[in-house]
Length: 154
Image (cartoon, rainbow, N blue to C red):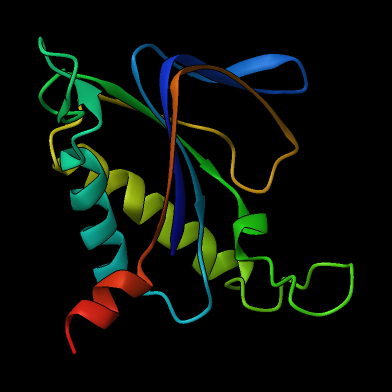
């Protein structure tokens, strides 16, 4: 599972010109589900993201988490994060999970993020053609891959 996290002052997602999700200060999270991902990766990633200390404290140090600032999250499905660009010029998406499984794990991740205590978690519409607007704060953008959890357990 891959998550691209952007620290934002605000973010929204629209489908066919209609806003379907919108947040204020917090994280815009693009989430890609890779073939073989499980609920365990979704749980670990949700926990890690909710506690990631990348908001500034009173000393202007990145020392506060999404939970510390009572921030919000906008989670958008993004299968293109699973792109393999090692060969040629056209990305391969063969490592992305099948749509039904990807949707199930995407929704499970959103549920787990809420259970971690994030006060507001909005979403896009799975598999829709979406327009995302963000006001990036920093900018701060971090890529997480659940493979880090598998490697740390060795």
